[in-house]
Length: 181
Image (cartoon, rainbow, N blue to C red; front, side, top):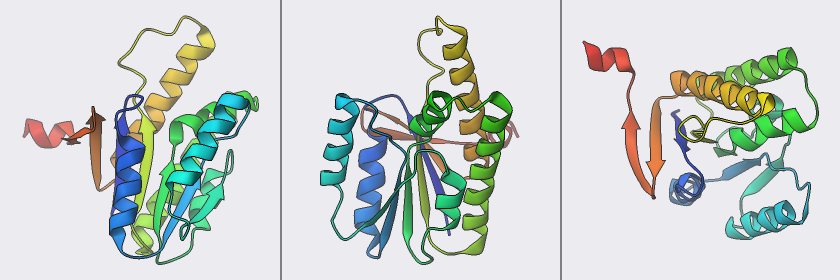
């Protein structure tokens, strides 16, 4: 089953498209939400996102154990993972060290690849592209940007298709070596 990777800037339409894909799937949908409501703003966002999803969908709220959540997703469901950006930020907030973060990322990509190979249902993964903006001012900001960039590359390499979203429109991302032949 296909693995689709949706990447783009903030408010580019990634999550909206993922939800629309789930609505058009015509079968059961399992939503893996990574946000952890640390403050009033996040609590309001989480509540808004919950209200936007159909009530027939199942949801797993998973701020840290993404690989397990992907592996445990019910067979035959359309899985939406929203989003890697927030999930990686959670690892930073919970003070997971660099090596463990790298292992968590590797495990999550491995779980996504296994789901794709095992033909249990299509999967959509959402993430932000944070490397096109202002150079982060702090070492932690640069480390986060670099780790997310590496994670995005791993997911894109695993995915059957990757789309870059800008202003609600999509561009198909291709393997550069395929384009250079």
